[in-house]
Image (cartoon, rainbow, N blue to C red; front, side, top):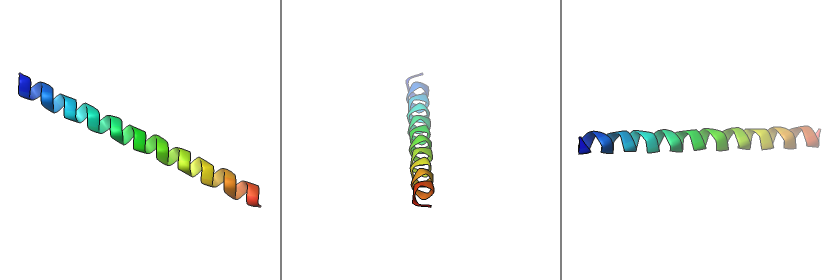
Length: 40
């Protein structure tokens, strides 16, 4: 039981980190896009 909970925790943490990375990546892309539009 303890082991399963631990594994679920790791998966939850990992997916949370991956989601944060995706959000940061989208944010970065948006900033680059806005910058590119502004420079035109």
